[in-house]
Image (cartoon, rainbow, N blue to C red; front, side):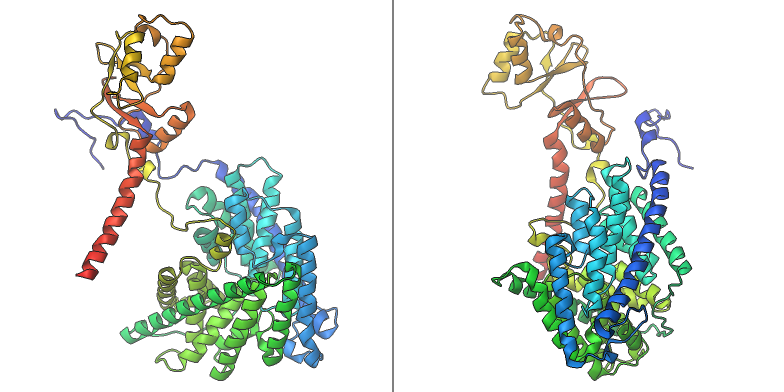
Length: 601
């Protein structure tokens, strides 16, 4: 048990009453209501995800086999032959028309659009997105687009959560939480990875870490995991039973694979945006760009049909070690080119499944030269590293790989590879494939989450203790001369009586106000301030609440009053508060200069 604080005489001193209101979190019971709404959002997200998966199969079978069927038919068995090259072109034309005359927000892979809605659009998405995004994605993927279903369903689930929230009396932050809950449910539906979906929300979508947002999102993920089982969706999606011994050589190889995954991530990101830059230079409307991308996809499909569509069979084959190095290398090259070109053209589709395939193909090729572990193990490691590096979400990628395979024995190799890949991309690239698109639209975001320094710093740590005051018997005339004197360097001053109690604060606006209403020049400040409500600060309160008070009362400075004596002990203003941020930046610069000094030495 912690002993109470004592004064100099050993007498116990109770903490100020305000401290009893402080806690680790600011969450209140309303989170239970939002969690209940998240159950409804999750159910709607599961339905949307299930429908999307069925629509992709239906579109594939219509486009390549001429069948109204939901059967899982393989594209290489299509009877179209060389004419199959035109299928992605036709599908891309439909996407272009839907984007131009429906909603331009369906273009792209979905996650940047969800982030943009959260940060800039008050988490508001319209009904068009909820309907057109899954339809356009089903057409794009079903006609051979080399994409995954996760990005579109994240956008669709988010739109559903946003629409439900817009119909209810909730705050902007609660609407954001419900949007992310829908996105989480959608991702869980497609892949059966509730933990990874929660981690994606924390690392990428919520932009905060608090129970008020985490709990509803966790509820949505769990509900979606249960309901997808009711719908007959299998889990894990790609069972993998391999394991590996922990040795020094093995750890070095895991790290090497992570480094290669990080380098591949950077290459793929640059390739996508190089293609996008190329399309921006074309003298035609963006509606036609997907058709050109579709032509490249069609040609790539003739070279390697395995590069078309979501390619889940490729992932399963590489994990089982059934894909040879030469076939994996061809898949990597063709998939990377058609994926980058198609995504750069502005069509609709996700990035997770393609990243898994390209990373797995790289791991299959490189793994043939690494000791320990089978081909499937190295493919899995490279999948996770490439995904984690490209999305800058190492924890998401780690848990994603574990849940996809149902194998917890490879958790240590996975986090090793993902951490190294993350380090490589963070040091080599300023932005990820997701945030680059947002930056190109003129917006900047930071994905580093820190505790608010205002919530940890007390007033007494930054206040000015040597306070220049004005006596209460000063006349209005004398106060006017004092404030307008060239030797006066501050805009406001506390007024104190002979007992040291603060009566108020004077500044030029208050002087002008008294003069305008006709106050006599010999009137004392004590008379002028009589009955005035004083807003003060206390030395033991935190800057977080003080900043809100300064904004509410619209003043720049406040006197700091001791709770025990009621006397003036300091003065604080916005400049003092912002000194906290300056101190943090100075500490960062000191750390950087230290490393520069050591390296130069």
